[in-house]
Amino acid sequence: MLALEVQIRDPKVTSDQLRGQGIVPAVMYGHKEPAQSIAINAGVLEGVWRDAGETTVITLKGLKDDKETLIRDVQVHPVTGKILHMDFYVLEKGKKIEIAVPLHFVGEAPAEKAGHVLAKALHEIEIEVAPAHLPHSLDVDISSLSEVGDHITAAQIKLPESAALVTDSEEIVVSVTEQEEEAVEATPATEAPAVEGAAAPAAETSVQE
Image 1 (cartoon, rainbow, N blue to C red):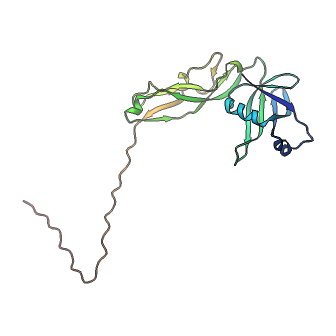
Image 2: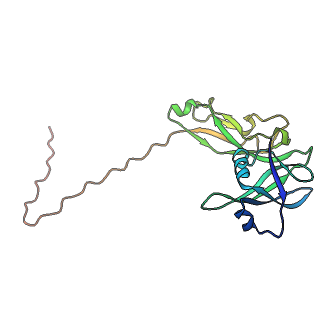
C-alpha cells in the first residue's frame, strides 16, 4: 500500500502560489467525509501517481487520522503534463467499493498466428471488492483463442478474493474475427494525349482459330 504525506491547505495561499512552491493543491472527500482541501509535494505526488494510477489504495498521512483513499480525478497541464490538482476519495473502513479495473491481455492467441483478428471489446470491467484486495489490473489470458468465433466473457476473468463482478457476466471481452481482405482497386490506365497530325493507332484485332 502506498502512502503520501499531506498537510491541510492554507486558504490564504492561492493555487498558483502553491504550484510555484512545488506544491499541488488537492481535495479529499468521501461518503461520510466532508471535503477537505490539502496540499502535497509535487515531486512525491508525481511518483506515487505513476505507480498507483486510480486502482491502488493510497494512505494519506499527516492529518489527525490516516485516511485510506483512491485517486478520483486528476487535472494535468495540457502542455507540460504536470499535475495541477487532484481529488482523493476517502474509503469507508469495512466497506466494499465498486470500481472499474483495467484489463491486461496476456499470452499469445493461436488465432492471431493463423491470420485472424482479435477484437477487444472491453478494456476494463467493474467489480465490487474490499479495498485490501483491490487489484491494479486484471489479467485476461488469450492463449485459448484459436478459431473464428472463440471468445472470452467477463465471467471468465479471474477475480481477486472478496471480489464480485458488476459488469454483465455475459458481456464479451475479446473475440476472434476473420481477417478482412482489402479490396484492390484497379488503377485505370492513363491515355496518352492526342498529337495533332499523328496517325490513329490500328484497331486491335482478335484472331480466332
